[in-house]
Length: 557
RNA sequence: UGGGGUGUAGCCAAGUCGGUAAGGCACGGGACUUUGACUCCCGCAUUCGUAGGUAUUCGAGUCCUGCCACCCCAGCCA
View (tube, rainbow, N blue to C red):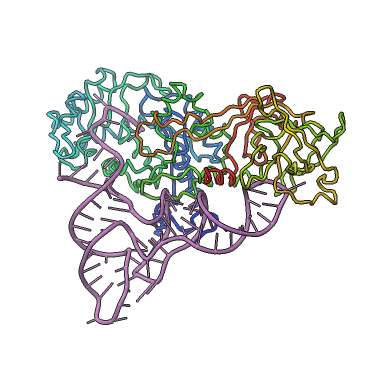
């Protein structure tokens, strides 16, 4: 029940249902992940995926990938490809790959069955009339005047619909349930409509298409799904789901269980909003590293393991909740901690000249790639008279508790020497242009006197071999005003800061796109999968390191 | 004023038959530190939306009743 890694040991309510099903002698479970191929997957889908596939894995069952492609005008193969790529990237593999459109004929036959049983009828009302007849939340609906058509007439009409004899909107097929039901979904819902549109898989074979509420439960039944897991907004649909499988005579019908969607602070999962960002150019595309899409997170540098870990830690329950993005960040730091090599990169360079280091001399220093993962080896760094440090690591008039470089002060250069700032070199307008420092030759890392304690250790690069790099610092897409419904007004103007004058160790410039690093003292970064080139490096910041100095500054000012 | 859900710390979330509030993130404090990172210690709900009520020995987040708040539903979308 307790756990030390943040992942719950106790069973969530879905696992309770599954174990009960299994211990009652139920057949092995089968779940499905049923996206409509009409857009890109986001981290909310990742939650659903880890639940759908995770349950099958945990209980020795199967999980299918089924594209819910019942609305041809919204769907495209572009999305079926990207969805498969994203699921595989997350680390899951489906048992069966299906499409609701595979079942169009069977679904059609189920519809005829309902007609023959007197449980469905062809309705000639217009869409607006159907809405009027449906009633409201507080008033019951009225029966359609076509509700009592004969079975023969319904069958003839429905076959005519299939044969293309009618235009869109002329007729629909409706389930005959209860126009007075307090559940609006049960007020004779439309289950088939005429659509003379090309379907991305079936082409022009069909001109009637089943609605979700009809196609979904029966597709589940056809595949032998035992547990149909979906999000909370479908709770109201469950009676209709059950009605469909019951009236179609399904034995051992699948059961639907609903869990809460994922919401994350400082971002939004709404497809409509994300599309707006893309369309208006607020981001560079669906895979912009600020986007919560899986392709965006991937490009940002989030790892599948981190996302899976996150999904396990947030749990599965039925209360609407908004998870702190800090948890996702924690998960990716945790995953990258041992996997990413540490390297030095100076984002905003400030030149340092070591006046007592011989001109023209260089030397090689060794540096561990990851002190916490010794197996990752070491590399050589070039040290020289001219170096660069981070501008933020120097202050002329430092406040209390500033442990970095300042006039007259000493700091350690990581894996190198202790240096002292002797003089500030100014430009014409008085700005700090460089620092003249001296180094203490006895303090080279690894030497007997290297243990002298100084307060600060700085990262640095050598002017001799540093490579210029473009570095993108990403921040949250939205501000923290979670109550403000005007999302465009919440857009964070500083969600991307691009630096093109960063200087990095040569090793960083040579890496392959997608490689992860920790830039020492700064954060985890990933070579951009699109723009990074050997020799012309481009890095995305996945997440910063925790920064207690920043916290101290915030408190004091 | 319909129906379906949910309410446990700043955010998630465990809390089986009522038995004396897990864990993670965040946050605060300290130790360690050639990353102000990591790691390690310590702290962080006398209280479970709220108001009552029952249990013939006490004991309720867990049972009962009322109230309140929030989310979802009136697509020929999924």
